[in-house]
Image 1 (cartoon, rainbow over the protein chains, first blue to last red):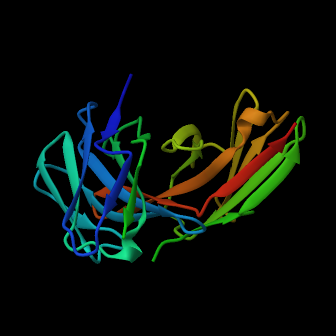
Image 2: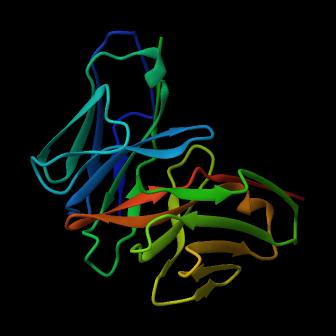
Length: 115
Length: 114
């Protein structure tokens, strides 16, 4: 059974803290993504990565950075957490779009609350 | 930028009725359109997808149609059951350089009343 695993289901952090959200996939996918999900706004792409050490900005990268040191792991970093970053964060992985099966697999989500 | 519009944002139906969710997309070059279902407390999961070389696809009680000319695609759920209650997202693939990215609609919260 294919799997994308996010390290935490729930997190509560204080304003100004540096926060790490970890994601691991076991499908040997090149592509990994971080989305933010807010009511009424759907899934918004924060950052994505097509390969180890590579990263690209998505639609809402401000206040975030990412790290991809190994193929299976993609980390989202909140440099200085703020209350407007309280949200559900979803990690996804996917084979390259040029391959026949291009389903994106999602983790279960991390609900982050910044107080 | 590229955009996917999804309607309605909420939908309530009686068990056994049909549900329809509609999406439009902006990039005429898009050629892959998946639909995801997100149950409470879980990540989204693919339920069906369609490619631009196909106009319609069906899998048991769910079906999707695609109109490339109108840049419009729809999800149909027939004989709805309470377990169909969830948030549904449409998506379209947009190409930037050598890679494709999925852009999602804002979601439809479907409630099926027993």
